[in-house]
Image 1: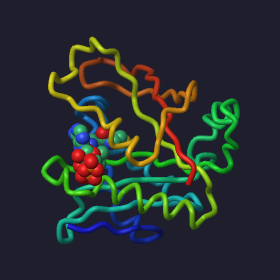
Image 2 (image 1 turned 45 degrees about the horizontal axis):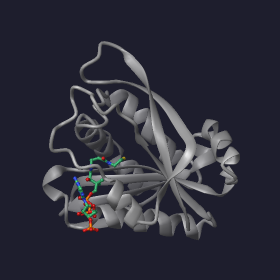
Image 3 (image 1 turned 90 degrees about the vertical axis):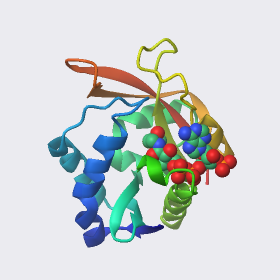
Image 4 (image 1 turned 180 degrees about the horizontal axis):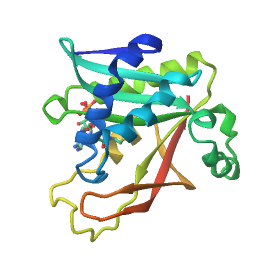
Length: 193
Ligand SMILES: CC(C)(COP(=O)(O)OP(=O)(O)OC[C@H]1O[C@@H](n2cnc3c(N)ncnc32)[C@H](O)[C@@H]1OP(=O)(O)O)[C@@H](O)C(=O)NCCC(=O)NCCS
């Protein structure tokens, strides 16, 4: 298994596979995302079209088994800039590590670390001084929370990230157990690069 930083045409070539991976992996707790290929494809095209967008692919041979995406925050989600400003962080300096997905059989072999390292290196090379991502906040008593679920907080802290107090994103999507899309709060985490 190996990872590759993809931009331009090589990024375009994997977009359908990244869309399928996102739908499969994000169906699980805590995202419970009931996604469609059509929406995913148009969402992901922003990484191809934006100036600083990147996809890091994880491959088993030539098969894509995981992917991580990233983009300058103000290119991807300018509406979140205000929260960063209030926290004393200039949003123009923030690179947004949007999402990481890896098929379950390939986990625990260091790909999650490689996804962060590649995106942080990409961000530094573009001159960004701060890296951030967000994670969905679910209530403790949620009926679909698996009893054995281990949060990724320890991994993120080990990578140098901390929750940014009061920097919260809001996204709407349809959960697998709900008839309609609902709003979710997501906690931003960040670190200086
Ligand atoms: C996030 C994800 C890509 C990490 O992939 P990975 O290749 O398994 O991560 P790594 O092997 O690099 O492990 C990273 C660290 O986290 C730990 N870890 C990985 N999965 C874990 C889990 N489920 N529970 C607790 N710790 C875990 C590992 O032990 C490792 O710690 P170490 O550095 O002390 O050895 C993968 O778990 C995934 O696709 N999860 C589902 C989607 C998701 O939640 N994405 C994150 C938000 S977008």
